[in-house]
Image (tube, rainbow, N blue to C red; front, side, top):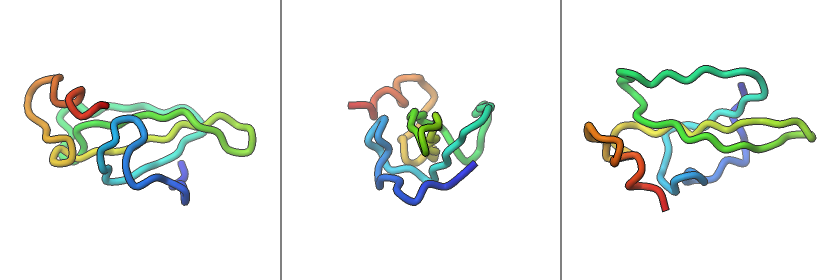
Length: 78
């Protein structure tokens, strides 16, 4: 896992501020059930040195205005 130096200020997937970003070149597992810190993680395929990579944008509950419905996550998308 890497932290990209060229990360944008807002998530390129949902255009919302994020808490952190990580970039991965290998296998990953995501489980946000009952996660006290993050409500949503957006995924953006990218590349580095001609190798496929995946960026993860980690959003807190407050950043996405989280409630108890799936509509909360989709309401922030453009």
